[in-house]
Image (tube, rainbow, N blue to C red; front, top):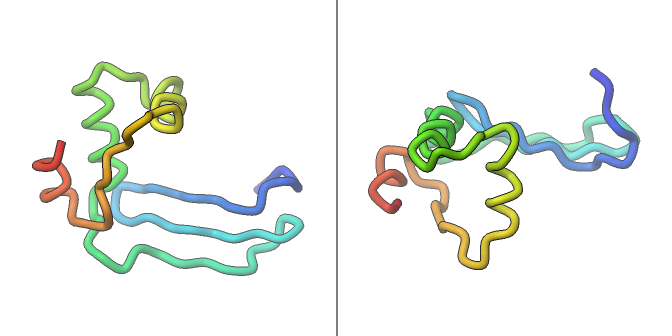
Length: 85
C-alpha cells in the first residue's frame, strides 16, 4: 500500500464496519474499529447518496464537508439512522 507521507489519519467505512487508523511516517501507530452497531454503514451511505442523486465518489465528500448543518448520525445502527433522515 502506498500512502502519502503527509497523511496521518485514515477512516475506512465499509459494508460491515468502520475503522480509524492513525499513521506516523506511513506506519500504523493506532487502530480502532467501531464499538456500536454500524453494520452496513458503507451500504447505508451509498443508499443515501443514491436517494439524493449524489455521486458518492465525486460529490459526497465535498457536499458533506461544506454543509452548514451536517446530519448528526452518532454511532447508532443504520436501521435507526435511516429514520433520522
